Length: 255
Length: 217
View 1 (cartoon, one colour):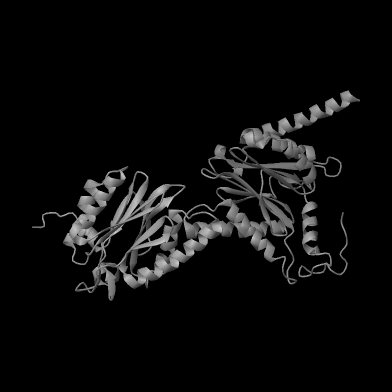
View 2 (spheres, rainbow over the protein chains, first blue to last red):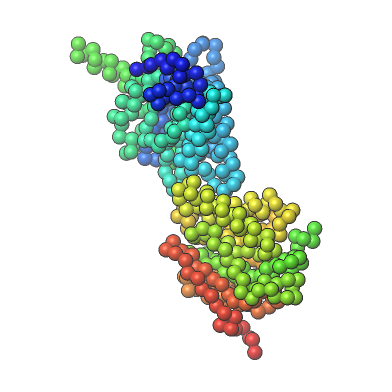
């Protein structure tokens, strides 16, 4: 799966003989080393879920956030090198703010994600800088355009999605997401499913404790992106844990 | 500081003018007179066009220094066109008005021009925005502007009704322009009107002698 590009991988300004830019591929590897983040778009909003690995018992609960607010109506979930992600969230915030200043209304998500993608892409062109080692998922809700979900990766491309996953368990998460009928679900139903998917893909053996970060934006929040309220989050986590136990039980029966 | 007072004190060619924009059920009508004057004494043009199209369904009417207004609308037209192509969709009327407002506010020391932006977009339908001299942006169901507007505030406030039909609105706009042009010495010529709806545009030009008469014996 991975190949070493000896000699052609020293800078982003070099192509390999088979047409690859290795620095960008290595940047994507950095994203794959980070814990999983997922975003799913449903009929009336977007829900984000992040598996935030807790490396030390001394960490304050709720610190080291991986979901950011870019503008009142836009949320951003990240995976990869967090320092890179934080500085890019500032870039996204400035873009949204300048747009509002010039044109008097909320920035459309497609345009925001294209502008951020253009910025990320610029860092893949020169040997003097390195590519950003993070991917992000943008989500927003607007009364006229409805819910929108876009993902940007280190190569600087952005696509619109109904559901996407980034990070170490993205393949497993994608499989779970594909099972959902998200176009018919509401945010309240989706929050529980997102929690369940994060619990499913979390590897109990390799990574011990984790915190589930959940946020949403949609009709239920009146178009404002915010962290899911504590009581709904607790209910969603309970649903997730119960579903996992059920699956475990049914496995035992088969034996 | 007197610079910010009356249009008729502008040096050079000015549009001592009457402009207005009125929303009706399904669209918006934007209208103006066609006189350009120098110092309020000499009519430099009897048939100037003060209704500038900045996009497919968005028009601007200009008041104040003609040179300033033309420069600003040219820059705004370019910015709005570029913005629309980047967005891959027609621009919002509010976005067009904001672009004009930014230009007016950031250059308020040098410029002396005010605008009325009116148009139709998919999101909010027909809208009218005033961009005043210093860069204030205000959304209103109808608005009048220019030196001639002072003579028709009473008429406009009394006769405007929300949700008019197109014909009622045309009559309202024509009457308002005729009354202003009849009393203001720096407004005159022909009345230009543009009806903007989702379907398209309709230009109406009414020569001075065909305008409605009000006790003109």
